[in-house]
Image (cartoon, rainbow, N blue to C red; front, side, top):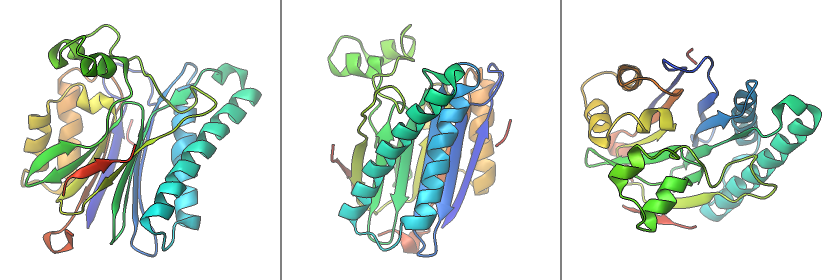
Length: 257
């Protein structure tokens, strides 16, 4: 396995509200996560940090020898506890009222691959050198696309494209979508919408499939998003699976400044 993650403030925002992590425990299980915070007075930065810090600590301390069903429960429990922690923090910090964060995560063990998602940060797998989006955006425009009200092309420039239908910190109770994936893949990519709103899938594929070192590929993705305007914070987490490590499609069980 090779992995690398990076976050960048972009070209427009004054500070970075994203948080990102890749961890491996002693059992060689991997956790990847990207959280895209929202809220004034740097509150989004607090919310995304609460999410990623909780996941990191809980993964290191408790994620050992869990079967798939136990891992799904683990994800759901984490989501509930992170959501509760965000609301608790708000009570003591009035300037942070209304803060929230997206969260996309992936857990890879020798036996299974799971994705969890709340909001519009994205999770992908790379299979046969092609990028396949696994997660489903919890956004207003995606809801309108699925309802046939607008086209995918219209969604790209829709004036309410940043409106989320679900996020951590937005409601006292929130559930993640969980996706169970087969393991015949070459890699896993998580990204905030600062990347996916500016780069087409084909451009991301070109970089991921290039001969650059893994670190250079992630840096290149962020540079390309900045070259397209860098209108948001940009975060990417990528894990590459060596060919002999690869274990099919997926089923929905529904920093750098």
